[in-house]
Image (cartoon, rainbow, N blue to C red; front, side):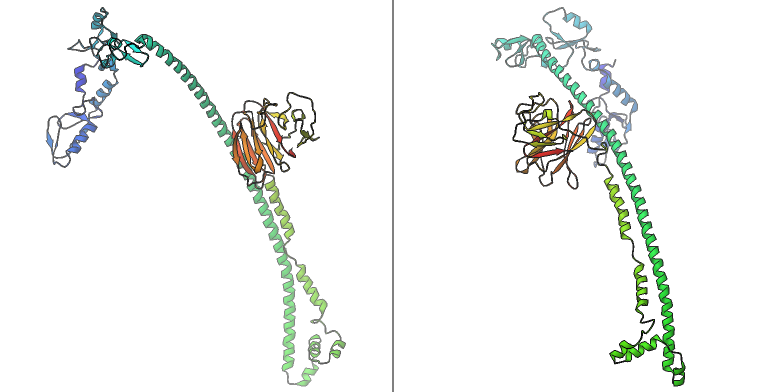
Length: 541
């Protein structure tokens, strides 16, 4: 056990507290690192540095060496409980020992030996060891606090009761008042404990939901990745197929054109040869040679006809042969036109496969097909007509006078689905374009059927997407409305339920599909699809 003298040796002479990170100067004196750094900073620029204790000087700023042994001792003493270092027996002068009690009357701390002497006298009030004796004395009369004034909620002495400002007030003993306060504190503690447990349960629930969300997100990520991987594969295959078809058609067209070009080149060479021969004849000066040359046929006849001025003679001349042969020209024209072009229809047909790929993507990863919803006539209001296929609910002014079933709605023109959902993911769609005012959503089977609180969305047992007057749209739960934009079509809507995740989502099936709102909660009962028809009809699918 550390003595008082030892503890004083562990006090820094600058801050007067136990050393913190002690360092040693060359003169051998120890200080807290922060304390001596501040002192040396103030000596900066004076040209000399000195020790705060012995005043030994040096020209250069001294290097601070950490005193590891002293640091360990200081840390050990600092960790000793306060009753072993702070509160000492006031009567053990030469070697104070830890106090076991404090005497308020004597304002002294007592060890085991001195406490036994004081304990024999009823005048002495002993409490647990403390150095704050002033808190146990009246600040006005400097007497021991013995009572508690319930009117002023203050601890008071005897003089306060007799002659002080608390005279005539309701009093209690300190022990009695303390017990009452402790009882209140125990009640508060119990409530706080309950709230803490509830908070812990909520934290655990949220952590579990977070883990489920992360797990579900990982599953969705894997599904989406696989989906797009398959789409890319199909797109690549389609691209290769279409490009191959284009290359095949281009090669076929090129080959056909090449054949015709080759034939025309031969024809062009033949014509060039004839032209050169005619040019040679025209350049000859010997008439005999010219006249003896075999007839050039079509070319000469053509030129002769071209030089005639008598139209009758021209029309009476027989056909001039090859160059003027219309059938020959048409044959070549047919060859050129017969080559054709790329088969755009075939390519377009292959591109339709792209549309099939996109159409084949199912937006609802968990739900392959919409849930088959049927309307339960046993829940329908008597002014609601249900179609024979159980899909359409129509508002009628004629009372159907159905049996007064317990599950039937009596106050609002509403109807529920026959199916209830207590797990899994589901979606269903509603056509509402023919109804001016409507509500579609989901509710618990325990929803009221008769009172004015039975409208879906008007209580804590239902949620709905609603179209009200003036084309205003909102998602409503427990009469709390979340307004939605009115500049998108609401002709057909989708309701998507993820029961385990506690999510109910609403979509507008416009182009593209628009997400309207998602409700997140914890479902405590199974859910039914619910419809409210004010005018005309709505249809589920």
